[in-house]
Image (cartoon, one colour):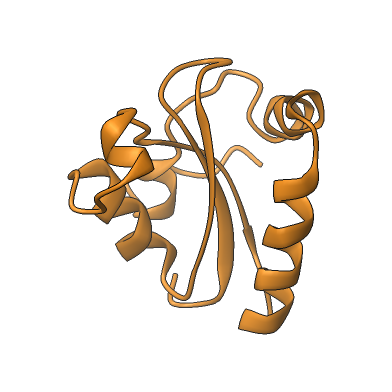
Amino acid sequence: MKAPAIYLLANQRNGTLYIGVTSDLIQGAWQHREGIAQGFTHQHQVKTLVWHEQHETMESAITREKALKKWNRKWKLRLIEKFNPEWKDLWLEITGQESSSH
């Protein structure tokens, strides 16, 4: 999964959300899961990967991340619900431990 990606993490269903961008989704999600990434996600225990989107370039990923950060909460929740209606942790999927249902 070494490719530009944006992602949404949550601490629980309809809970606190975090939007991030990375060049390596597995490494980025792992850092949040393990509490290595200090700051907001560590403080609020935001560790569950609930949505992600791959991009061709880092520039397009950053542009999309900035746009999503401007979205209101309702739109972000709708995006997660459409992609992942059960709010399951997508960690197993991105690491190849579970097959994708999308």
